[in-house]
Amino acid sequence: MKHKEIERLIQKKLDRELSIDGKRKLDMHLAQCPQCTQLYQEMAQTTRSVTELIEFYPQAGFNARVLAKLGLKRRFAWTRAAIAFIGSWVAALLLFAYSPLPAQALNRLATSIPAFMRLYDKIQIVVSSLNQVLSPLVKGSINTLNPVIGLVFSIMFVYFLGKALQKEVECKA
Image (cartoon, rainbow, N blue to C red; front, side):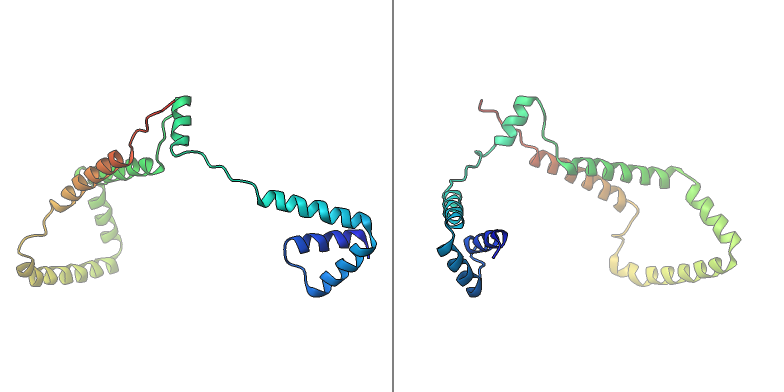
């Protein structure tokens, strides 16, 4: 057997992955070769030493203390997403409240495609009939103020969630 193959067998034995046939071959070779026996003993000692090492972990708040000493502030990734969310809400409200573009685009589309106009009329009939059927059940709870209320509550939610998650860590150094 070649010594490279024996080294692989030694490693497999130390990893507890050696088959019975491989163990028999390794034991026969180690009985005859002092160099491989010494290599096996050194690797076994190294494996024992590594498994007996104690793992050390930093104390709680280590990252915050390091950032404070460097003069950096920890920022959460969701804050940028929240700003984009709020910005998109405001932009959408401004677009639909003050811009004639949606109405113009709908008019241009409706006049250029007669089939779309027929479909639009059918959808409008279905929506108005559903409105007449459901309006007594809902009793006026659906109005145009709901999106504005939703925007205000979502802004408040993002603001207070940010305050709750953004606790300052005091530096003990």
